[in-house]
Image (cartoon, rainbow, N blue to C red; front, side):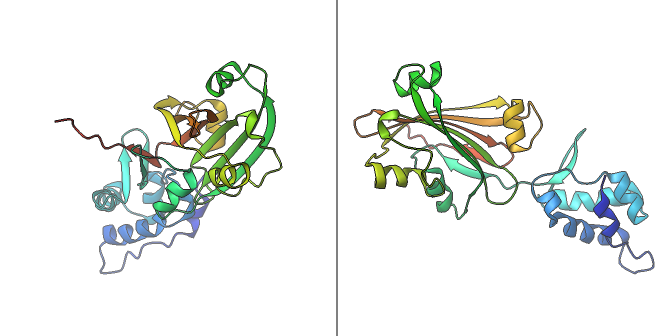
Length: 250
C-alpha cells in the first residue's frame, strides 16, 4: 500500500543519535511529501516500525513530539495524519470567493469547471423568484490552492442577466457580472450548516461518502434586492472554518 516507504532512508542503528530522534527527523521529512499534505493518513505504525527496525514504543515517542508541536494529529481508531491549517473566513461581510481568499494570501484555481443551461428546479425557481422549468445558467466548479479539491460550487443565475456558457469563468465571477452585464451584487442571504457528503459531493471533493462537509447556501441580490444568483458551496471541513463577530447591544 505504501510503496514510497521503500524510498525512506533507513535509520542508523550504529549512530550515537538516539533512534527516536532519528525517527523524529524522518517523520519531519514524511510530512513534506505531497502524499500527506492533503491530510491523508500516515503509514501504519507497524509498517514504519518494521521499516526502521525499531519498536512501536520508540516510534510513538517520536510521533508524540510532532503531535505536541501540532504538526501531526492522532485519533484513536483512525490513525495519524498531518495537521491541516484550516482556512478561516468570516461572515461579517462578504465578497467573491476569489477576492476573499486573495485577502488571506491564497491563490485558488479551478480544478474543474462546467457550464450549461438547465431547467430550474422547484428549489432554484423559488430562490431566483422565477417559474419552475425556466432555463437558467448552471455553473459547477471545483477549486483548490493545489491539486487536491478543497471546495465544490454549484451556481444558478437569473435568466434576466443573460449569462451564457461561452463566458470566461476563469475571471472573478462578480467582476464579470459587473463589468460586462452591469449587474452589481450587493446583498447576500446565507445559510451555513454541516451535512453528510453525498456520493456526488464526496466524489468531487475526493473524500469518503457521509464525511461531514460545510454547506453554504447563498442567495445574491442586486441593489434593488432582486436575486442574481443561487449558490451552494461545499467546503472540506478539514480545510475551512467560519468565524463571526457579533457586537452586544448595551
